[in-house]
Image (cartoon, rainbow, N blue to C red; front, side, top):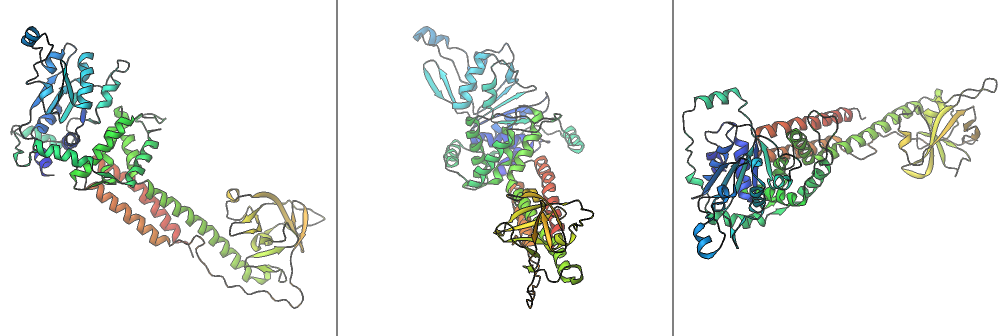
Amino acid sequence: MLLLKDMNSGVYEKNAEIGLALLAALAGESILLLGPPGVAKSMVARRLKRAFVNAKAFEYLMSRFSTPDEIFGPVSISRLKACDRYERVTAGYLPEADVVFLDEIWKAGPAIQNTLLTVINEKVFRNGDQEIRMPLKLLVAASNELPTQGEGLEALWDRFIIRIVSECIKDEAEFYKMLLDDEKDDVKTDRWQITNEEYTDWQQRIAEIKVSQEVLGCITEIRKGLKGVEVDGAEQHRPIYVSDRRWKKIVNLMKTSAFVHGRNEVTAMDVLPVYHCLWNEPSEIMGTKKMVVAALFVEHGRKIERLSTALKADLKVTKVREALEQARRKNDHRDDDLVVVDGFYYQIEEHRTGNSVVFMVDYMNMRVYDPKCPPPSTPGVIYYDPMNPKRTIVRTFAADIEHTELAGAERVNLYRDDRHIYINGMKFAMRRMTRGERQTEFEFEPQSVTNHDFGAELEAIVEMMDNRTKEIYENIFVSNDDRADMDDYLKTLRKQIAYVRVDASKLI
């Protein structure tokens, strides 16, 4: 946006403040700058005044002695005498300003703060018996402290939709530029200034912006995340309350972002800056940012997790198949007359419904019963075959499979002799070939039991992540720090993808 580029000219590490202030102004919302004195908080409001044609500005430093007359204008004595009407002379004061800057906002008295509630939320000022529609586009408040709890300031605090911590210049090179910069704060923005007609038209067009289902899903994830936000220096996570009214205004900010970027629908590109609208204390900022970033990539993370789970299942089955194939081909290590079912199982006679099998490897490795010296039993499990619910499978715990996760799994004790298998001490014969019967040949064909093309699906996930990252990068209201923090989170996802790739390479 060319206007924003001009407004940031000659500014040192205040791009985020100015950008978000412009976003708030175009959305008709307010912004709070939290930071120590001397970090150019008032300059943000002065720069925003230049964004609008013939805009009027009002600045005031609050104190506990400030009166409503100093903010909203003095009472008109002439009107009081002539008409017995209590009205203020508002010319040159807050009710007639387009851009307002109120420093040390929490030091104002209750009379001022209560009036500001209506001013910020409804853009209306009651003067005598009349309600005046204000031209207010942006109210910038500043403070070096949070509102004191227990003094009834929660409602006013909630009115400031965007909150941002404004700090001293961190980068040494930028600090030197600021020290040596002799230019005055006289940046010209006449080329790109917004007229009142444009502003009114834009408000209507912003209201017509649609919100994608994808973004609604992100909001749902964020609301879940707000139930427990990571806090700097604290072991336990903290819940953060965000009112329905505040969410409505947050969505309006996202609509404004979409409009500024030339779109008629809110997408994931517009979501990241909303973390500025969620925190209540500076210690919650990083936690809320991480939570919003995670919400933006939650579906990608879930796809990676589902793929990883499917791959683990494939690896387990592959290992079992390798072992079974090896055992099946070594005739000298198995009973030649035992019937092999589906290439991998031995059939158990008269057990349950008559369709019970035991894996060949498990049977051969089972402890052999000796009447003179009864062996300790082998722990095992019986479960219904997920691929064939009418079949019961007997396994030993030595096998590489998560038995406890199988539906209806029953733990048992196992051992065998030359002709039988013993399940919990009960003897069952093994099915054997009759005279003249030949073993059915079975060719082992390695395949993915979950029907996944892991390589292609991983590449698709990476491409989707890259596309989303690129979109978010292009949002002019996303700072360099935000991009860096998002990249840090993405490193975790990319590491998970790398692990899945390594496991996928082990598949036969």
